[in-house]
Length: 128
Image (cartoon, rainbow, N blue to C red; front, side, top):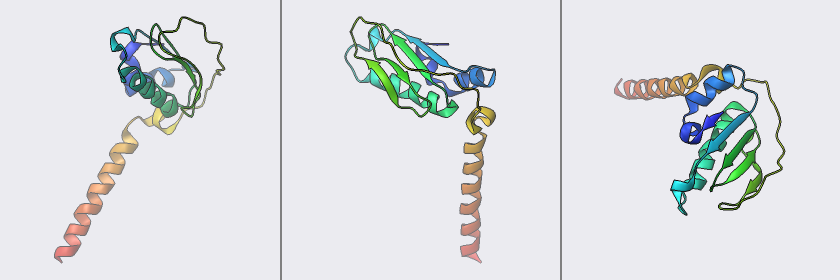
C-alpha cells in the first residue's frame, strides 16, 4: 500500500513488489491539486508503477481520480473527480516479477554505459 505521493517513487513500489506484493493499492488525498492537471499527472505516474511491476493497481482518492489500472497501464474503471461514489472495478493478483522489479535501474544504467562506449568508440575511430 502506498500513501499519496509515494506512488511516484519507483524504487519504493519496486521493493514492495520484490518483497511479495501481488496487488498495488494507492490511497491519496488529491484535494490540494484543486482543478489543475496535477491529479491526472499523479494518476499517470501511478499507472507507470503498475506497468513497471506488471501489477494491478487500485487507486482510491477523496477528490481525484479513483481508478483500477491493469498491469499494462490501461485504466479499466474510473470515477471522475469530486464525485462521491463507490467503484466496483476489476482487479487481480499477480506473482510474476519483471526485469525492472528484479534489477531496478541497472538495465537503464547498462544502456547508458553502452551508449557512452559507442560514442567514445566512434569518436576514437574517426580520429584514426
